Structure formats: C-alpha cells, structure tokens
Image 1 (cartoon, rainbow, N blue to C red):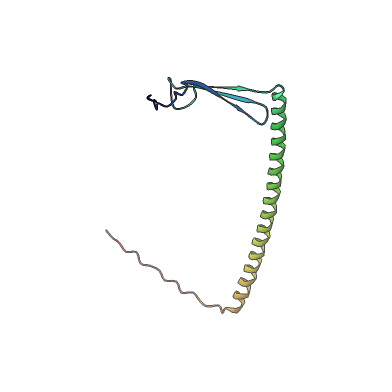
Image 2 (image 1 turned 60 degrees about the vertical axis):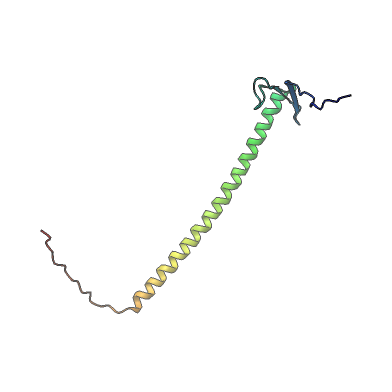
Length: 121
C-alpha cells in the first residue's frame, strides 16, 4: 500500500483574534488568494465604557507629563542659576586680576607706525 507524503493543505482564508489587556479585541482577517503579505482587514472591538476609561487615561497621562515638565523646568532653572553665579564669579576674578596687572605694569609710550599707501595701479 502506497502512502502519499503530501503536506496537509493550509486554509487560504482565516482570521486571528488578539485580545488586549484592557478587554479589547483585534480580529485580523487573511486571504492568501488576494495577498500573502499581510491581513486584508483588521477589526477593532472595544469593551463597553472604553471611551470614559480612555479619556481618564489621557487626563492622567497629561497630568503626569505636566508634572514631569514642571520638574524639568525647576531643574533647568536651578542649573541656570548655578551657571550664572559661576559666570559672575569668574568675571569678578577677571576684573580683579586686570586691576592688579595694570598696577604692576609701567606706562610706556606707544609707537605708532603709519603705513604708506602703496598704489597698485
């Protein structure tokens, strides 16, 4: 008796259902006669009351983002103050060293040389 070793045929049309943590479902429909690259359609099904839950999640995320932005703003403001203080401190030390160097140097007459106009024409 001969046994054929042909692989079992896979269905050409099928669908896969994905369930999310929040209770929603995604139904992906495939038709391999049309395309082999991906689903031909995707249906989204949401649980009852999802709109209210979604709006609450958005509000919560916005408040968290606002809080984080406020914290970042405060942190950058403190950093900016530190930089300004350090810059002011450097400038005061530079002014003091300039005053000291002026006292130590002897006044000398500066020689100024006038350049003669060279005509190129």
